[in-house]
Image (tube, rainbow over all chains, first blue to last red; front, side, top):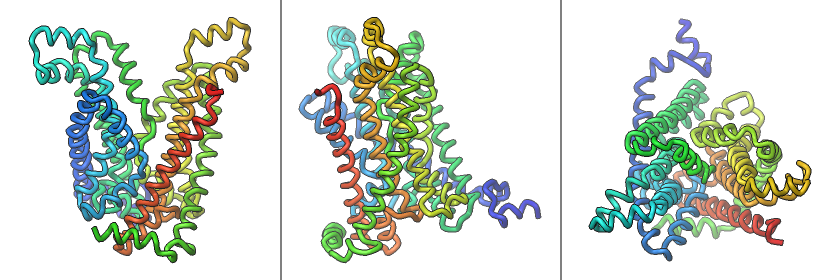
Length: 242
Length: 220
């Protein structure tokens, strides 16, 4: 009986809720992870060519950075609603909105990373007979990787938080549980889903940090410089869309 | 696109702008929420950040607060606050959430602005015999100004965007036009509301950029 009580009395913390609705929580979490991973992956796939274009053609840099920045200040509820006529109520609606948000940080970080590649490294590779593609893939991208991954980390954390707003079209992962919890004033559900959301963001951030260390072993030799660089990258844009 | 012509019809229908649920009333609510909260957040965050920046302490705090802020879903916090006893006081959850979300960009940018003032310039000012107060007012503050304004701009846009989400927790503001449209399954209204909200956010960003340039102490 004591266990049943917390559902009846609508407590904030409720073990019985965790037990009885674990499947629902797992499904929502998986949906949340799926939406986040898809958005960030597509975001990187779109941002990389944009950053390369902005670097190759100077006159495109302004418009590309300008447009992505403008997108960033559009409130998420409005963003999802504006895409409604094009996608209907669907997951692609939420993912598209999140991809558009991710572009600002990703394009900026990738561009900054590519521009920071030392000219000598580029010249040396060219002198060794590297073509443009091989130069990009084997020299420039690896050297830009710390900045790129710093951008991916920022984007992932804010995407996890923003996914919740997808609840408005029923594809918000844990956000859907949070919004349902509001309608039924189900406190345990709101708190549990919110906490899971934050945990998800922190876990994703730590995993990406680990990945960054694995992929860029050379940066650890002079750690002070990179940690300062990544800290700088992390605070260049401190506000996130809501 | 039916929804787009429909949205245009919705926007050009005078009746949608009048009354309790009309655009003007929602806009007024939105601006009231945003304005009050931005002012309160500035009053809390700026003095603190400028002080910490001047004495050069608390950097980790300023940076970490903004990182934590990014991980907390706005919507979740808004709804959590609505379900607490505060929710019985009408606007309180919205106002508190808005202030909480405006503080990190203000704090971080103002602090970094103060810290990134060239140390050589600070030393030179000290060498000229400036007191701490003079140094703060005549050297650090003017040089930190661009970053402080960036923070105010981010916070302003953030607050306007969050005020939109307040509609999902049942409070007023322009977001209500969108959520009401969803409830009525009226796509033209959803799109019309979204256009209004997006325009307002861009307008606020623009106004704050212009204001930042106008009041820049280094331009005189």
